[in-house]
Image (cartoon, rainbow, N blue to C red; front, side):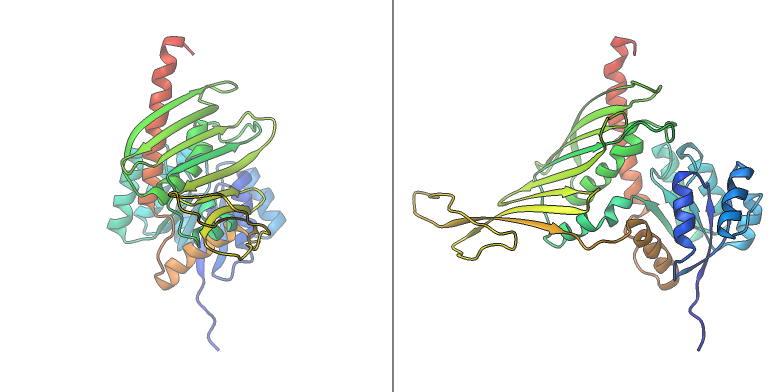
Length: 337
C-alpha cells in the first residue's frame, strides 16, 4: 500500500513557542519534520540533539529541503522571513501577529496570492475546544467582554501587550461580529517595558455590537476568559480550563437543562408566561489547539481544505490592534510617559 503523502516542514525560531511547535510536529501524521533553524545556533543544536532532528544553518538550506515552514521567531522578524520563503514558493504558517505592521501584512497577502501558496496564522484560540463548543450554538453576540491577563515574562516584549495578547481576542471578536468598526476608545500604559504592558479597549461596531477587552502582561494571576451576551443567552468561556458556562432562556418548557436547574422568571408582555432560565456547564472535549491548527495547515496543503485563519483575517486583527495602540499612545503624550 502506498504511503500517504506528508508535508516536509521546518521550524524557523525555536524559542519557547517554537520548541512546542517542533515537539508536536515530530508525531504529526500529516508532516515530516525535516529540520529547525534559529539565529542562535547553539539553541537549535541543543534542541536538535534532544529530539534527533536536523539543524539548518541558512534560509537557503531550509528552502531547498522544505515544502512548508512554521515561523515562530520574534514578531519584528516575521515579515522578512515570510517574504523570503513565500518568494521561494514555500507554504507558511506564521505565528501571531502575522507581522509587526499592517502594511507588511498586506504585502504578505499579495505575495501569497502571487505565488499561490498557503498562509495560515497562529491565532490558536480559534482552535480552543471551549470556543469550538460555543460555536455549535452559532452565537450572535451584542456585547463581548474579555480579560486576558498574564504574568510578566521577558519574552515577546518587542511588541505591545495589544499585539502580543489582546490580538487573540481582537481576532475572535472580528470573527464573531462580522461588522465594520465604528468607534474605538482605548487606554493603557507601559509599566515594565518601553511598550504598552496593560490596556483596555472598547470597540463599537456599526451593527450595534460592543466589545470591551482588557489585556495585561504584568498581572499576579493569569486569566483567559471571554463572555458573550446576546438576546436570550449568555456564554462564559474559560480558555485556560477549556470550560464553558451557558445561561439561556427557553419559553414554555418543563425540561431542566443538562446543567441542572430552571426557574420561573416572571410575566412578560402582561401575560403570564412560563420562562425557564437554563444553566449548563460544559467541559469541552479535551484537545491540543496547536495540534489542531497544525493539522488544518497541512490538510490545506495536501487536500485543498479551507484555511481557518487566513492571512487576511490576521491582517484585520493587526489593523485593529494598530488603531488601538495609536489611540493609547496619543492619550499618553500629554503625560510624557
